[in-house]
Amino acid sequence: MSGVILNNVKKRYGAVEVIKGVDIEIGEGEFCVFVGPSGCGKSTLLRMIAGLEEISSGDVQIGGRRVNDLDPKDRGAAMVFQTYALYPHMDVARNMGFGLSMNGWPRDEVDRRVNEAARILQLEPYLDRKPRQLSGGQRQRVAIGRAIVRDPEVFLFDEPLSNLDAELRVATRLEIAKLHGTLENSTMIYVTHDQVEAMTLADKIVVLRDGRVEQVGAPMDLYETPDNLFVAGFIGSPKMNFMALDNGRLPDGTAPAVPGAAGAATLGVRSDALRPVESGGDVAGEITVVEQLGDAVFAHFRTGWGQEMVARFEPGTRLRAGESVRFALAGRTHLFDAEGRALRAAAERLTA
Ligand SMILES: Nc1ncnc2c1ncn2[C@@H]1O[C@H](COP(=O)(O)OP(=O)(O)OP(=O)(O)O)[C@@H](O)[C@H]1O
Picture 1 (cartoon, rainbow, N blue to C red):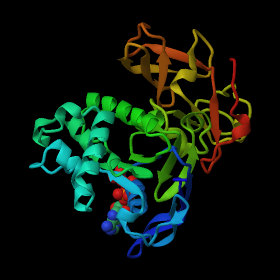
Picture 2: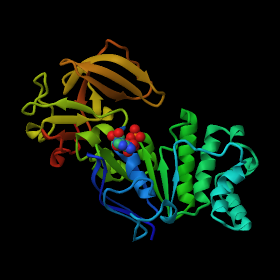
Picture 3: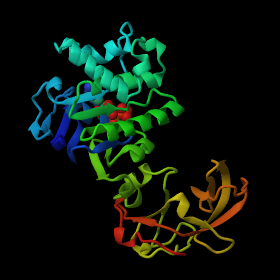
Picture 4: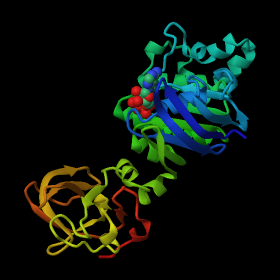
């Protein structure tokens, strides 16, 4: 039993409340990602689980035990930080085993665990190198190794990829996903502001905003059925297109073919749910920028009422800035009320 439960957790710095009552249940072996914009409280929440920040009120449980008053080292959690903070004068093996040695573990057991972590992370060829002789990705693997040797119930990752360049970020992300597969039953909590990392790694995503949970769910549930405008706009790339509705009509007076639109304040549609048409359709505009990505073409266009939107075209489609385009809504559409809450009943598939 190594799940993590947060029960009405709050954090105050003086008079300022930065975590405003958070309830989350993370099952044993689950990979849970906290995602949200800068300053929403992701790191604070993770540090409260780790024991690096005091909990102002509420409970944190790890493996069924309330850990609020336990020292970080007694919580069964190991944290991997954004800056790997390796000891520059120690080789890789010493860096990984140092914490255990300091806690009086026998040499044989430290060596055994370091070798096992090095095997899992494919660091065996580098065990006697110093950190300066490693790439950024290898250094981050050593930092992860330092957590693995402790054999924790819960791994806590605080933006571990943000110091790596784009290519290494993808490679290390895949390694972390594999690691989760290898270390069966170990629960992982991972903080990022990058929704692509969240979508690709998580079993469960917790979307945070301003110290509160906006929605919890599996990646595709959040993508397909966001609870509100914030989650709809945050999850998915490119961002969902939003159009204001007035009595079911778009700002240019068009009534889009969406059941239930009359009661909604905002219509949301992803770039792949806009089907190009020669005439008629629901939305028209002029292309401003064309992005050729190889496996897709994204056309950014400006509608007659001056709104920037984006549509996905098939690979190889030839488009130019300045061209006029028209689209029918041809896929899942999302409707939101004036408070930004999803109106679920109307969010149904259309075959326009
Ligand atoms: N020691 C502190 N004293 C006062 N306010 C703090 C302190 N530490 C963090 N905060 C505030 O708490 C809020 C949450 O910070 P936190 O670092 O958890 O956000 P985050 O979501 O991890 O952001 P980022 O993605 O930028 O790291 C922020 O508004 C921050 O300014």
